[in-house]
Image (tube, rainbow, N blue to C red; front, side, top):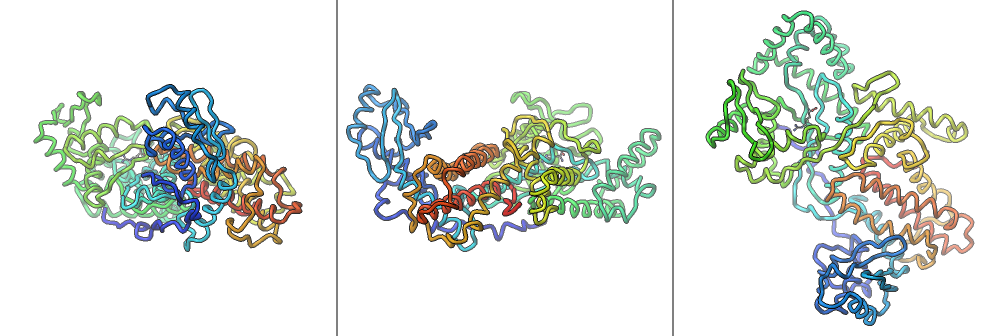
Length: 614
Ligand code: ARG
């Protein structure tokens, strides 16, 4: 693991927010953990907390703040009074709040209903501040990055995120694809939240399959094919030699002998393997790039130091944690309901588990991470619990900062030609099916500037959105037709929504360039549809924060759909073109521009490139 993380040095640092609340609106108390300069809704929640604390002396602003939740449809924020466990009847408490309440620039109304108080934000303040903040955080910063929704929760902290991790010379299955998509999202998310992120791809680049390939390479291998597509060619050879080995046991013996030479560090035996590994990585990098996925470090099972693993086994032995079983060594984890985990085979070779233990130790030594995340399918839940536990029992404090982000199965994924074995098959299939789909509408198709690029991007968006739409732990069934449709909650629908928003400035040249929202008549945004959009836009920083807690990409996908739906309900009533009042038209255009920026930010967080035209 000698390589240095490429991207980490130039990660965007979170500049101080260029946005500041208008002076007369900034008399709100400080509440730890909030940041009204990046999340306007924090300011409204603080204002509500202050209303409560002013009326109920037993309640501090901080405590009150914790009780301010989003309201149900039609209400901005709701407070459930019983949660504060204050002395006195709920009705009396509510009465005190209502009596004391004075409408101000933050809060328009308070309504009491049963155990709840419902608060309505002052629309003019909301409009102005939300749009201004998005504008400031999207445009006025030099690099345009990090964008609105970003926060500094992880400032000064470093996270390692390991994901994708396919096996060289074996097939890239859908589980790997899902891990790749979720891992890319998490990397973007942690970066957006101020963490220093280092991404690792831990290749399955070691094992007896390389002995087989070595012994079959002379017969089936071609240097040319290898250079053209190493991933594909190595798998081909592997399949052929494996078939030979079925018939002729000596093939397997030869392979085992070869792999033994590799394990012993025989340079001659390692020479080819190194080339195969290098060429496979190069091919992978190309394919990942098409998915907007990049790794700082390509490491792998082969890179784990033998000494680290030996030392770990020795330490476990000294601690009396190892028992012998027929020559093999295992750790008894039954006290933790984690069974017995073999860490060394009878023939002395290391295994998957030992390598993971060694790899984690070496990664901590090298990176001193504050947290390390493994994005791996839930089929490996037990494996991860076992090796986390072993590391903890060995006394490594940092082992308490290891996290497994797991996910369910993808069912029924195949292309028209059959089962999927390569990543590029999935990418090509998504692009070509999307291309066909777009061709069906002759007129629209003609208007597309670059159909190749567009169908690839929209197709990939379809795959990604389908994958991230439901909770990670759920299995889902892969369905090309459903994911590539423009109707329903699909990736193409989101891209379409973004494209439509992106066209607004182009279609209204007389209104641009727009002044900053604080110079606009945002008070003219009075329609319910406009307000819904503004409030949703205001909630984006909360969505990001929450996703960081849950590690659920579905939180972001759900938001993107809600926003897109709110926008499509507004098109007819909140018009720009044809609106005679230019001030109103400008304010509305600013609203759509802000919506475009936030939808774009959501898509980028999901590793999707938002399209400008389609
Ligand atoms: N290569 C493994 C597989 O395909 C996944 C590796 C997961 N990472 C780990 N540290 N065990 O199943």
